[in-house]
Amino acid sequence: MSNPAQLSTNVALDAVDNKGMRLEGNHGPRPKPFFTPKRIVLYSILFVACLYYLFPLYVMVVTSFKTMPEIRFGNIFAPPIEFTGEPWVKAWTSACTGLTCNGLNPGFWNSVKILIPSVLLSTVVAAVNGYGLVNWKFKGSEIFFSILIFGSFIPYQVMIYPLVMITRELGIYGSIWAVILVHTIFGMPILTLLFRNYFASLPVELFKAARVDGAGFWRIFFEIMLPMSLPIIVVALILQVTGIWNDFLFGVVFAGTQNYPMTVQLNNIVNSAQGSPEYNVNMAATILTGLVPLIIYFISGRLFVRGIAAGAVKG
Amino acid sequence: MTQATSSDEVRYQDEGKARRSLGRVLTHNLSAKIAATPMVVTVLVVFIGCTLWTIWYSFTDSRLLPTGDFVGFEQYERLFNTSRWNRSVSNLIWYGAFSLVLTLSLGFLLAVLLDQKVRFESAFRTIMLYPFALSFIVTGLVWQWIMNPTLGLQGTLRNMGWESFTFDWIAQSDMVIYALLIAGLWQGTGFVMVLMLAGLRSIDDDIWKAARVDGIPAWRTYLFIVLPMMRGVFVTAVVLVGAGIVRLYDLVVALTNGGPGIASEVPAKYVYDYMFTAGNIGQALAASTMMLVTVMIIIVPWAYLEFGGRSKKS
Picture (tube, rainbow over the protein chains, first blue to last red):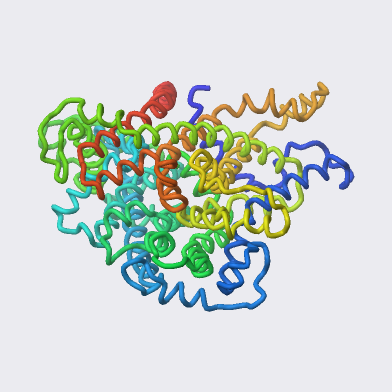
């Protein structure tokens, strides 16, 4: 009762971690014959829910392989009669964003250029923070941490204009470096929390023994802590890669027209293109943009769930 | 070994006490302090500094540049006399109320259904959660296409012979908010479902045994015993979903871009548009300060609970 919010997150994490959401944890009634009326209703509801979740994916894929005349025929359910890969080629190489007609591929590479340094930088900074907060507390370190967590709830719109001015002063506004800096800043609360909780769960004796042996701050970090934190690093990477790839606001504000990430270019292709809209190209472009996080989601599975359960503190 | 460490610790503490002169305080554990610089700078400059700056300049008449004179609450008066802002706020309230209630209840319902020893549970979970991995832009654009009145779902079903079928919410100014809701729920319910499922699985088995012995039907156990025990999970979910709702921006940009007219405008978009396209900084900052106030109303009670609990524990 003392601490419901934090407790619940821990509970969520534990349940995901320990039970791995396997069937053992179920609380449903005892196993019964498979086809009772109740089970039929149950599976029907779940089936209908899945239709709702899968329908957009199906529509995206089907539309992206159709030709425009076929789309104008007006049946979004129908699979393509005349199968064409052209919308995909166009989406990647020559779709127009209102200004240029280079397709999504510059956006993709911009996203990659933003993604890699942002993910690395934010993860490293957070790992050091977490380690410092657990093992090298200084006066006020907990207060800073509390404000950090609290600050993660402040709407970005509140801080965005001053940040524009700061990045302009630093001379990086309108370049990918501004986006990287902003991602590092706003990724810090949740990642720091993640690492702090992880390092706090390691036995203190490890740190103390190294300290007695005369190892300093960085040596303990690189030789003891870092090698042990692979699992949490993977969770952090998943969280950051999907989060940064999906970002729209920071890209559109800080990157500058030349460096727009994929999400911004996608939106420009679909929403500010002139002429009659090409829905098949739009859908191919949409799938292409969603592909990176989807691949990560399907590969990482349980770790993704763990990442968002941990991220649940911040959201 | 243990003794060596503990006596060592005492020695360190004693040293620490002896060294408490001001210069020493600064240089003690110097590398630890250097390592904490990014965090300290972020907290002081961004989270505190930028926020205070925004609040301060929301009281000026700055236009293209933040250089205006102090004008008191004038920007706020203008804000609440602007129909677009008022529409944004009412949209957010409606969207927020529906979204909060539906996300939580559907998330809980799906979690309970998946808790019934369902076959292929992990497949169901994967299907329900995948939209959460996608960008709001992707979600918005897919649903924009599905809801396209002539070629989307409505057109398709009409072509199939269901002439009266109507699903053109995206083009109706009084219904467009529900179009947003459908897309938002599609993306967000899976996440709440996972949180709730983890909560359900953490309930002690003995509770279930006791309820079964007493002959309480499963649905009543869920509703009247398990649900109250999951209060913590619900609080977390409310805070997260609530903070997400206030930030609602990308989805609107992709799905409707605020239209038709101003029918689906939201505060976050108002801020962005006044800041970067209309060039009215003071107005944008006043609007963003109002967003901050809203979030604080949600967060402060929760933070109070959390930090109250933490001090009790230590």
